[in-house]
Length: 592
Ligand code: ARG
Image (cartoon, rainbow, N blue to C red; front, side):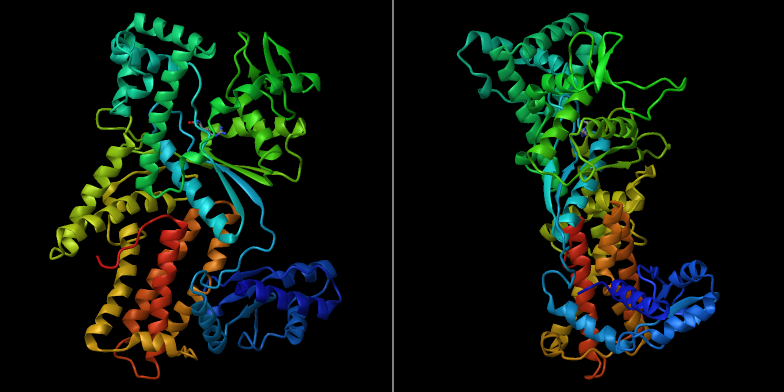
């Protein structure tokens, strides 16, 4: 089903062309800001009138005269200087609702006509450090983008560009030796037989020693040299730490219902062999040169405060390669091997300059032609109650695992208050869905570029645009179905037998119209990778449902009206479930 807004646009464009003989008219159709004036409004006539130097209101009249839209809308009305207001006909809405109902899997959201290959680089923690809350944001925002793109029909390639190489590993290897070295040296124990029971404590302890014990620090540096020269035993330890870090991340992804697997990991270390070539090729083509001993690119348009060209450093004086070099290699791989039409990077806004310079350098080198779209999706900082970057009470980094545990723990209280008579297993299951869902939903519901204050109380509130509110809205519809069964009302029969939808009450119409906007909401959310467009849509849906449910009897309705209302309930539940589960990766529960 084509989005209604697109159908309206086409009809208006045709009428504009008919009335003026102009090609390439733009109808500029938007949802009406106030339902008093209708459902949609077309604003394109004013610009056209200006171009043709004619009276806009007159032109609007001529356009409306040519407008062939009676099957969809009530007679169009002209307002102000030349707006065209459109109100959808109840019968048309009814037909569309039936179409939506018939499409069990996609709720009548069409696949895109021209699917692309899109690489999404997200999560990408530095595994020689702890995964922190910034990675939480990248992980879930990136996941939602992937899910929406896939639903539209694109080929999505997830890339977890983990930081798995570099000097940080020296301290971890050094610490590993302190813990396990004796066993390794004395016995015939293999590296692969050893495990790190708690990755986060392991990092913390290694870092503490590195910062406080100078012997440890210098020993760590020796391991870095050994690692980089390919020492077998050291590489083995590196592999073990890397592997266990990845498992730790996978566990977090799994808890978060984020679709990232080990096969999506393509870490910095894997680009090692390509790095000398990146530097050589850039130098050879005059795109990089030596500056103060380092090799730098100077992409056009980047200058410092003094107006001097800003360097994009790709090799340090000591010969070491950098984050930038790896990213250039990754672009070559993604465009050259993965055949990406578009690459999306999801990181916090502080990396904006890095990506601007990266994109400029890659374009200049010819590694990303103009038809390859490069996009940096940024986000703001998660803050604590003190409005400073989120930390533990003692000022340490927040362990993601602990954060999720606490969310689930607190959600138990919500469940307890709502439904004390449920059995314990059910309560635990609901608490998990609500707790994890709350952390994710509250992040999604913010404009991604704003900083936001992390608050368990707010995200677990039953009122407002929160996960529990949405999950409750879903469970509430499902409870109507259970009630029907108890009352002996055959709603399955209603749904199966329905051939016409009668939308009489204005609350019914409002709900139907909103349901039919699902595909518009997804498209809007994807236009600039903004999950909050989707959460806002879902929240509005839940509210319109509430209004409808307060205004209209469902199970107690007339036989003639009941199937329509049952269908509206069912479609609301299906849409909320699809949005939460399939697109946001948030569980729904059948009762709450
Ligand atoms: N590892 C980086 C960090 O933790 C993020 C990597 C983002 N992706 C990229 N291709 N640079 O900040």
